[in-house]
Image 1 (tube, rainbow, N blue to C red):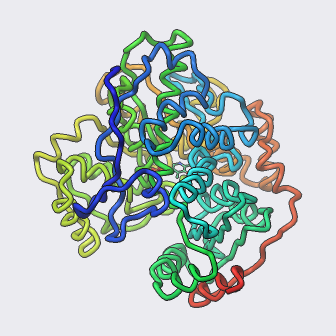
Image 2: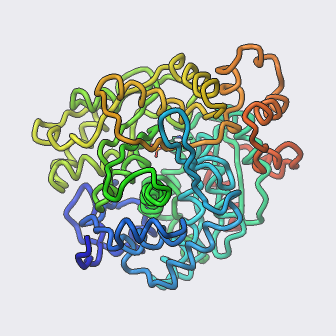
Length: 500
Ligand SMILES: *Cc1c(COP(=O)(O)O)cnc(C)c1O
């Protein structure tokens, strides 16, 4: 485990072009040919598990991130970590591990927006600014994001009032939940802009992509001292910070004597875009003793089918579920795994991705499928999801959100199918207060008649958990963003905000 680590460079998944340094990959976000940046090798942990067991979240974050972001200095990285994981989190430990039922729930929702996207989006702005400085970029960075709800707020919270940046978020005016909308339109910070568009999420996403690829606009922006960047989940600057909490959870289990040094644990991840579980896969490949990576899907079970058959097929009906952040048919980050199991073969990966974009489907060969042994996929339907919320509440008094419940239900299926009783960490990706109505309805149908905020108070009593500040904030916060626009006006809105 103590071997010396080399510098990590980043290559695209779709061509064999030149590798770039970590800071350049963070600045670019996506390769020009549409591929994703991947590390040219996965570094090995250079501290023993025993040493890690004695460390704080911030210290472990440093030990992990220094191995991936090798062109950052120690001071730069520690500075980013200190600014990210501070009082914005409502607990000093940042990511508490709660034992309930027969698993350990790793609570990743103690940040500003009470969902796990905060784990990465609180540090991304600092990584991005440091990267800009290192590469002698003096332009102001303008973050453009299309959101279906959660990413927008987490990005706003991360970038608000960060000097040298502005952030513009477009959301479908009638396509997000009332709580999600309220969270966004009450966002403070003079460098923030939130705009409701008259269209759906795909329209917002397409509009943003069009602005990104407009070369004339790019040149004009540069002349005025601006450049675009993205807070999208495919940025390596979001992936790397997610590796840290898997290492942290292992270290805590070891420190608390729940496992022996070197004992394998399993990890269950409620999955949408495949970023979170890919981070767990990277942690395993760094030498963290992880057995199975259990990939949990909701009724949009593309990944379940993929792990069973080797066929990825997005041609199916899109189902709206009570775990909306997992309602996804194209899991962008899966491309990084496909590239890897193809033997880091960009040509092969590019063909598969071309097939996905042309026909909505691709199939991997037997040799690639062989390399998926670390993964187990399954899914939970709506009634199974609700049932497990009720069961865990009744057994332990512990209330989980709908996304985490998908993972808990899949974990039950995994155990029944395999008899594997390895100690298991379940990634708990959102606070139940973010999806109060679905959670309360799962516990008892009588709650359905109550108003949203009455339900919040009721949940607080039931779970014996204080209402999170993020929810208190929106009870009374004034609306500060009320701009709306048509899809074809998005560029004009950007120009107006930047005064160009
Ligand atoms: C984004 C999100 C997920 C899915 O995570 P991926 O990294 O996209 O797989 C799961 N749960 C919640 C609450 C989320 O916000």
